[in-house]
Length: 207
Ligand SMILES: N[C@@H](CCC(=O)N[C@@H](CS)C(=O)NCC(=O)O)C(=O)O
Image (cartoon, rainbow, N blue to C red; front, side, top):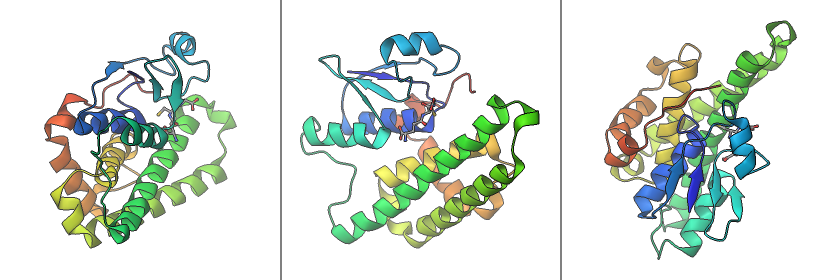
């Protein structure tokens, strides 16, 4: 199995770290959707990261679907989801907030870095920035409110929250202030020191 994409993508990184935690062997290929577009296109014409090339050559996309596929088919019962239904609902809530935080961060980065300045549309930036801040406010609440779950083990929500936070801080730290998010700051510093996070550091050429 080959995981295609740069680790400075929070979606690629969450898949890499999760596969590692699940004990699933894979090869990581650091191909960028921007600086090596043609190379990526040869692997997957849709050019979306992460792409997972399965054993028979079929290509899967979407980090959550890739992880669901792996857990369902080859993780031999191992899972990063809590078993308890109430916990699972909270987990889905936190994970969805982390993924929206990634989406909104990336929309801002693309708008700033890919669109010519004269064509940038301020009301859109204001809207997306508001959504980004709302997602992180709610995620910070989840982290603080569910301290017990967030402090014990790796789960899909804790991994995604920590990775989203590192990504947003590296790109948009002046918009989403660390001082307003002590729970996320502490979660991120703790998880970044774990072997699985260190093995897949957030390096890449950016946009
Ligand atoms: N919902 C997707 C988002 C993936 C995504 O947006 N990846 C970015 C890289 S960080 C990408 O492929 N960008 C190129 C593009 O969308 O054209 C997931 O969870 O995998």
